[in-house]
Image (cartoon, rainbow, N blue to C red; front, side, top):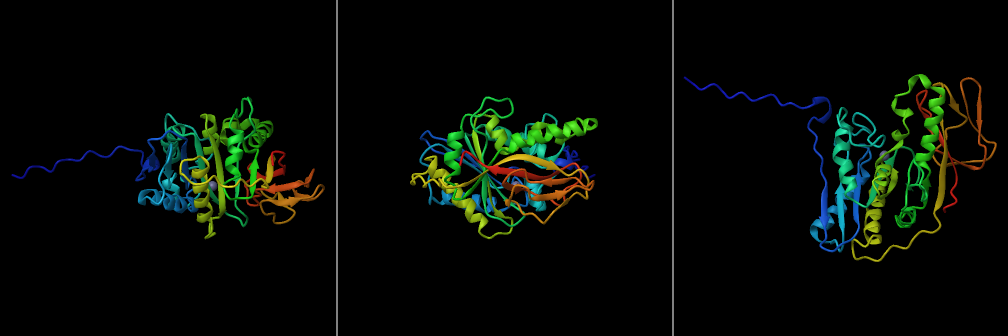
Length: 335
Ligand SMILES: [Zn+2]
């Protein structure tokens, strides 16, 4: 009589969240002490230029075209493999919001966070490569000036500024988390009944770079260009090499700093209240605003005029009611 076939125990894992995805990082370590750099691609799955750029740099380390003179470099070509496989911005949610380890992971991004957050903590500097939907030139974002405030205490502003000036882009933006926190405060005022929802938590503004700063490091997000721009991977690749040279991880000359960057500071975020709140024209991100210019009109007739000269940033005509409609920026005194 034939032996009964062995029974294979059912795999026990959360099919909704962790199904068939694995995380990859590749680390090169020099025997010589130095900075520890981590480079991320595809934190948003449809932003693939960083993946291409990172794989190119990684291959050059593997073939010996570059060698690590000091310190550590870790490459993460695909940070969010579920979103990457789907070619969507998010898997279950935006990885770049409320990023922190989760004791009880539920959504796929919670699993990413539980792998990524300790990995970030092992490094000193983060370069996070993204791309964007609309037309426009590459830009980079940096953290706050040095401060001891509760929201985002920081002491590497000089180092962050030196790095952003060497990435090969000419536009820089700061003020993200503080502007986001003010927006959260306003939402709390107007939507007291919904306390507990994600976008009412100031920590919801914490993405990769904010998390890195909270762990004692510093970090730049580089938006390399439009998703489909064939030049975007080159922008990312150049920034990786420039960062490696600037941090003295490879023995190449420190790139010349761009001391004439256009600097913007986010200072206000306006939410849509009604889905039919409408822009006065089809704004593009970084369109300049003249003081007194009409930006948009709410469904109830309330009009928004620019209070000063500046820029409109991340306008989203398709935003849902209660979510971010547009940001306002002014000239940044740091630049
Ligand atoms: Zn992105």
